[in-house]
Image (cartoon, rainbow, N blue to C red; front, side, top):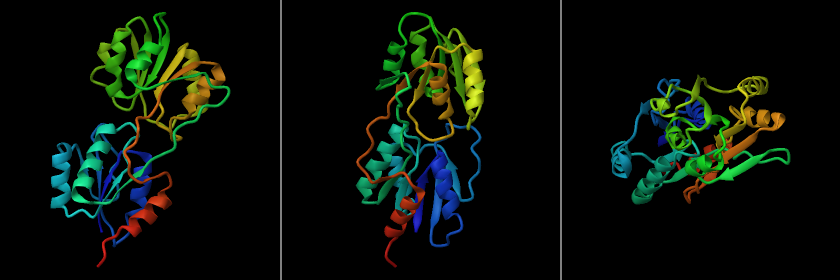
Length: 248
């Protein structure tokens, strides 16, 4: 079975490790290239885009792909749309491997918003110290609110960091402990955390830290998913893969 896995997430890495030794699956893992030095997986991989729906369609045809797994980040909207369109056009099976979103507790001080622009508006006009964990691509929107002081944390140094007039950059990769998150937010005098509702455990401690310190959270909710089968457990996606193996 020839399988394309669109990855870049912890869930994709777990799936890859599970199928790496299987002789009945010939899989390729595709990284978007957002992270500059991804950890090499135990299967063949590629880095970079495909060139839209047309480029992905060509790739799937040339490789004689039998099925596609979309295990991209919950906010990788364009890649998920392209995968759905290409697989629909070719009649290929497509499934999503995702993670559950974070859920608000009664002690959280969340403001849920639909997108980055709404998050900027939710900060208000009064100057605040803002902890930004929205990824490199989302930083540009906050240039519209230069009155705030930003503590920015990203995996790689962002090219556009200079667009924020007042900022402190932290380059780090999770997982992060609750103790460290509390120390960071307390020492930096963070007044509000802005983050995407990505789910998962690697960076969840920041929400617990904000809860413990009584810090406001502006959380950007996920876009609507593509109408394709979606699974949160690797075991379930493995069952789906086995069910969609081509008939000899």
